[in-house]
Image 1 (cartoon, rainbow, N blue to C red):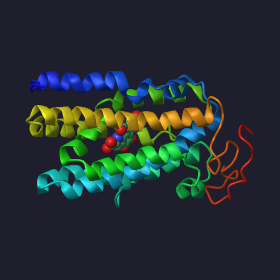
Image 2 (cartoon, protein in one colour):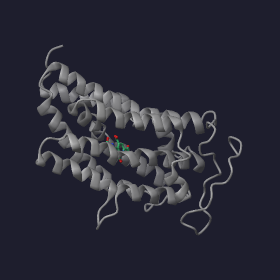
Image 3 (tube, rainbow, N blue to C red):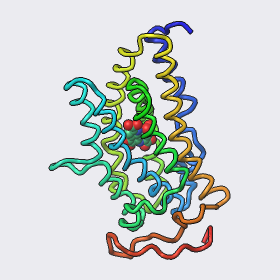
Image 4 (cartoon, rainbow, N blue to C red):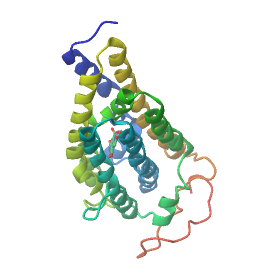
Length: 263
Ligand SMILES: O=C(O)c1cc(C(=O)O)c2c(n1)C(=O)C(=O)c1cc(C(=O)O)[nH]c1-2
């Protein structure tokens, strides 16, 4: 393998996004096109909460490995974006507003009890990847965010158009994401261009991005298999019709006992 020029390297990264990013997944396309039931949208919101909750965890591992004040200062804004600070609520809290908005009980969401095993394995694999691989690969695995602004735009437009139970407030999480994603992925791309100085390092960056695409894809596979076709959630996870907030209450309604699949 020979060293790619910076332009070819960036093209190879973009090609991975064009062919493997989760905007291509059938579950994502159904979500955007208004083809999901409310329960299926609830399943998406509930499971993705687990991804959201682990993002600042994985960024904390990366932060600890960055060798300079400048790099850490840049990277720490990612953690603040998700955990919030004295002035701004963070992304995790905004995701809870999303699960509130689709009618899920807050305590049930926070408990993580109804998360699909496939979601858990995929997200945990991402955290493990950034802990165990080189720093370059850990940074590169966030490069999927090069492709998220477009995917988010299409998703928000589609969901607002097609679902009467979705309001702009419910999707407020996504308002700031495209700008944050651009800032973060510009930084990560710059880092990878600077630090991938050998062909095998370029290959490792490309593979880290491929891996991360599978982390996102596997989460949608898990949702599709459990809640779309056929409806077959594993035991002990969220069942449609359960875990809903009582009318007028923000949280703490006990999850209803699990019923049979599809009820
Ligand atoms: O809605 C999306 O399509 C989407 C995708 C991704 C991504 O590409 O990993 C992230 C997010 N959203 C997101 O909101 C987010 O905070 C985020 C952090 C990261 C990361 O790898 O550090 N990816 C993503």
